[in-house]
Length: 496
Image (cartoon, rainbow, N blue to C red):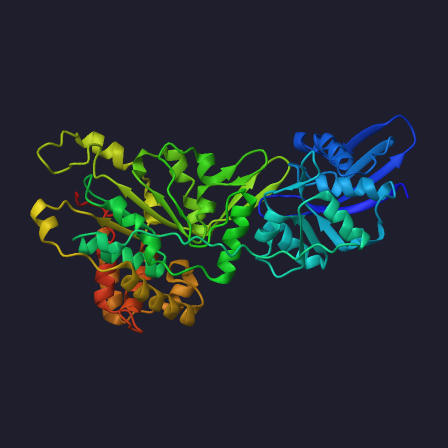
């Protein structure tokens, strides 16, 4: 048989489209051609495959070899097709049986010795393979990652082992998950002394997955507080763990086992935040999916980069369009940011020399539409040395995390999602107000000049405050506290 067909998986964002590898051997001068829109790394697989076949003690056919990667209009990148191409050549030259190839899908990069190397995107490939009923065969490292999905997966170390499986001589072992989990220790909230309002805001933000902005002078603990947020968030649910693992797999990063915490430097470009490239890869906002994106010194980020956040904060996803394809990455993240009240950071103190124009330019780097999407804007005030010394050690992260867990369970039982993800129609259903609460909110919104979006954000925070208090209905106390967390988007900004 001079024609064989094997199956592999491409990588397109977090999707893994099926690629049919057709191999044909014809008479003529020896040649090895790969067609089907291969990029440079795929074209270079000719040399890797030839050496791997020879070093695995097979005969490389001295004939005209044509490998077609279908569909032809799908871009092919990386070394993930090496194993499928090598097996296609061996089957077309009758060195291995081709009848069993229909039952498997193969992804893996070949070393010149014939051993298999890990490839990115193994988990999305396993998810796609599960729907076809085939068995995925890949390298040992990628197989342990893909084993997170309940589907048949075989782990191989070399090309010879895969051929032994196809011959029926020595079955490949089933993939198993890596159980050597190293726990990540989060900093404890008990280290924060004082700052009771900021600690309270952090707990509310964690309970309802609300976006949060800390502002205040340098050295008051804004970054310290934000870094403690992962320690009070509940662990990832199983479906969330798979979503996050698929994203990190497609990016070629090590799988995380807890909620991500991404803190890019303020010099990050818009592409670094949103993702992109000729072969689109997830950016920081997607890598923070189901976790936290922390922007320290937020006004120092390029305004073009900050404005990119507006759509993902509303839609929970990022769409990257390129000439060849459109890729969608999930981006349900919780934004936490920190900023100074002015360029020098000491607004209101005698040492501050910032002019009103400088302060306006600094604050105007955060546009109104972006501030609208930040549910809570909380001042972190300076503390004197005596306050630091006299303040007792704060409450531990474990105690706060338990209250957050209970509040989230209430939300999931009531509405099936966290308060921060409620839509407008759901707010009408789950955030109904009494006459007194409605009058207070209406009067406050008109007096403070808040937008309709800010109105909805206040309702969401008030609903979370009621859940933390164990109340079924939202009271005036929750409305008042939720309004107190919105300072920077008022008509008159109160200096920090």
